[in-house]
Length: 88
Image (cartoon, rainbow, N blue to C red; front, side, top):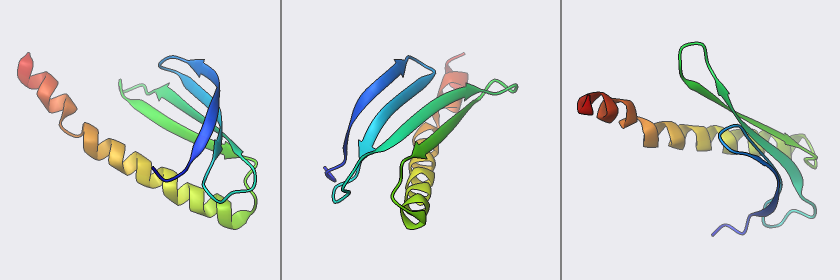
């Protein structure tokens, strides 16, 4: 919808995605890695690491973007644990 595109390079289900990732208007793709890391408390940490960004501005822009994505994921999953507990 926004014109972003990329190509998956590594897929390790439930653990890691590594891909080329390019926003509309960028002259070259970056490399994006998303990892799911288990925590000692039984939760999951989602890690975003992006390389080959054009400059500091692009790095700050993408940091803000991925923070928004994490926020939306947290909102979407907010009721998940409560729904599971209600079924038990």
